[in-house]
Length: 168
Image 1: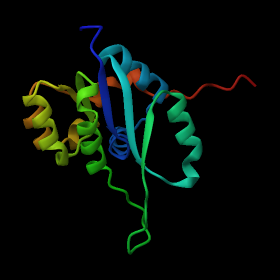
Image 2 (image 1 turned 60 degrees about the horizontal axis):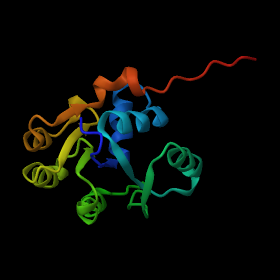
Image 3 (image 1 turned 90 degrees about the horizontal axis):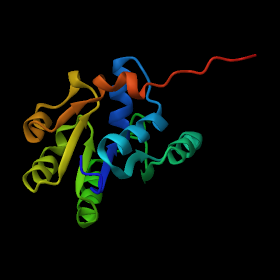
Image 4 (image 1 turned 90 degrees about the vertical axis):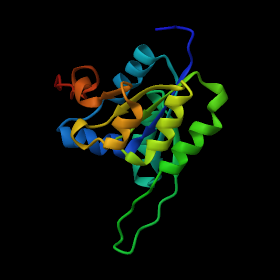
């Protein structure tokens, strides 16, 4: 790995969280941040998420772990369920930052990123697609990323959250 390379990660937060929940464990975001820096020379890790005021504690922890948070306002749907959709924001940020990074990491399972991944790959700007769950990864991503795909499933030992035992 070229240590002078400057890579950026673009993370679909909801997709990452739900994908790992399906695996039955939780991510230690500090470990994940270190992993991205050490393994892929990630200089900036953008995490895209819906803004919900009640989650301020989580947002603080993510920022302390080194993530740059990009929020999308949320509004409830007709059933009162809050759902944000950050896909367009991720694509736009990836393109806005194009000249600032050497390679991009796309962290999601979502086939909506097919065109972005294909464009990054064909322009030699794709470092890796880190799919958040092998079982639910869109075949569109596997086809556009080709050999440049890895799965969070395989990273459990490196990035799993382990609750600290109480010493009291």
